[in-house]
Amino acid sequence: MNTIAAISTFFLPVLVGVILVYALIKKTDAYGAFTEGGKEGIRLSISLLPFLLGMLVAINILRASGFLDAMNQALSPLLIWLSIPPDLLPLLFIRPISGSASLGMVADLTATYGTEHFISRAAAIIQGSTDTTLYVLTVYFGAVGIKKMGRALTIGLLADLAGMTVAILITIWYFT
Image 1 (cartoon, rainbow, N blue to C red):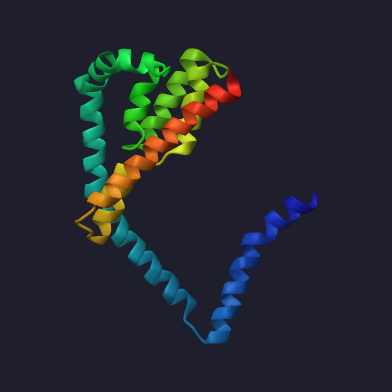
Image 2 (cartoon, rainbow, N blue to C red):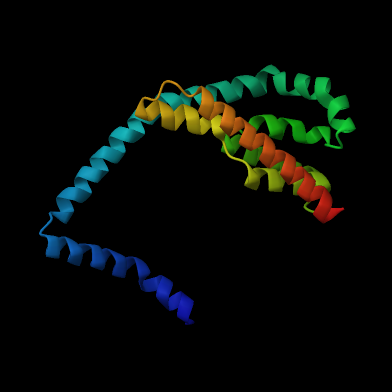
């Protein structure tokens, strides 16, 4: 067994042991704190469910209604002029909304075009270069009760746009 494997095998038990020893030194009820943390985690999970459900319903409505296909057809000439393959548009639209939906789109594009195609590579770089801004704002801001999120939304979407633009430019620069 190599050194890294040996360290990784014992890391978690040693970490738990260190925490327990520290709790003993500080005379803290480690088990009580652990169970309180578990209760708080369950309460937080339950409070997140309505926001998560709302996002999933919205995503499914967009996909089932054909909105993404109509938007793709309407914007195709502009995308072609900008040297962006129109097949990337649904990903560019869905990525700020849902990580799992966009990951499914990346997988579909990769299965359709193969791993060596420009579209597949650009999709993978976009997936890694951007975040699920609307999801983060809806779920996490909603869970802690933040109501005014206009500036955070603007900055998050601008960051996503910058990440997508740079991802496409890097794909063009590196792979062509």
